[in-house]
Length: 104
Image (tube, rainbow, N blue to C red; front, side):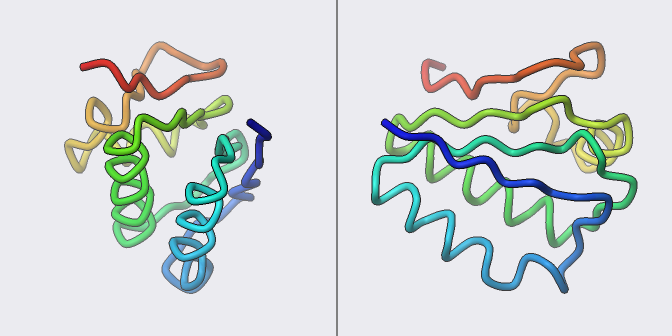
């Protein structure tokens, strides 16, 4: 299984994620592991988090791995504010590589 790293950059907003979900589903269908590099995120909107949540749920349904690479404090705080941190398997004290657990 090959890995695709998505560099989320400094800002992840609806303007930048228009085609992202479709591309993520393509990677999933191809059996690729998706890793999100969230280390530089300084701004993220609700729509972007919803896209990531939708993909995370689809990956979980297919028992596919999903990794978060060094999520920034901004990413973690915004996910927590929306109540998505636990659903996305992101914890406040974790600043390294997160791996999506398909075993619940």
